[in-house]
Length: 505
Image (cartoon, rainbow, N blue to C red; front, side, top):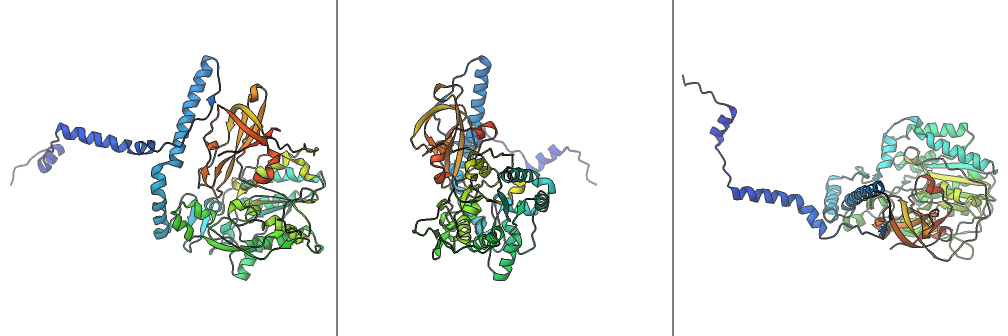
């Protein structure tokens, strides 16, 4: 019987494996290599810049605590800006993300945190899917219910009829398996009905149209409906507005115009250009023109006002990439046989259109009907803070001349990361104070913060900076820029009367 050997684990391991001895030079080399690997990414990025530029000077402050607070705020703001810039403008991310995402999409059928890919190749927006899959509380739509109740009251006092048009989420219509609305949808419709608010819910109409025609009602690679579905809704909406046949339209419906584009969801996948182009789909839109051949335009003197978001704009404004002149307002006007007014802002269906109407209450003068279109996913995720429509006043004459505003940025609205939202353009809001030396003067300035998914110089502005900006009154350019996604500020700044527009590079 062999003798018993009693060894510790360490002794046994040393006996079996042996001892590895590393010279001092090798140790130093390994440590240096490890440190260099940690520093590689910031070193590479630093050679290409962080995408951050300091603009203007810091506002002067007084007092020891004010100085400390200013320093602390500056350090926090700078750190957050660097972190955000690295995420959005990192050389390595821009270099490696598209090919990796392309491989994952083409060979594994994978999307990303914003876009889901289903087996048949259809793309779905995550907020739409979350709206369908998350049963949630029926009371989740209470803020929207209160907002529409207040709007209905404001309009009713003016003798104006309100029709609410909630556009269903894409998965509810385009799903091989039965999909239903969020629980808040049923409660929302019931509460509006109880409060005497008229609702035109197109869900069943779109599902019936899909079943009968066999054609999709939504674009395969985009969040929005097809031109045919939009026109179907416009025709049904006219019947809801008026039971009598409309007169022969004075407008002209143009021959079909083919449009080919990669949808907003395809762009959000951030694929390589060739792969993104391969997802492009084609549609045919019907532009609407005036009798003299000019493009259709909203008419503020019309007795019908359409409030909406990108579902109204999708075939109306060129910035969305699906043609122009053939959207919901145009086809509603065509079928009604009379002019229509329109306030529609991309991603603004829950809040921004109501803010715009509150800033321009004269748009309600002479109105008999207001149609409020919004994406139904906004029921659970939209901003439905209360907005009261003030009594109408005579609008001030539009000023066209430019002026210079020099002041301190009190607050600036955040810009979404490029490619993280369905819209390539975005307008940000600046709250300026201490304007032109007046400590009481303040104004709200809108600027384009992103164009074609590329941040502008305005995206580098920070709170606390003193700036000098050339501006024009917002009302003089609202027709041109008013439909672009606009990130509004919270609080009193959103209610300022002095609103301007500033161009940005």
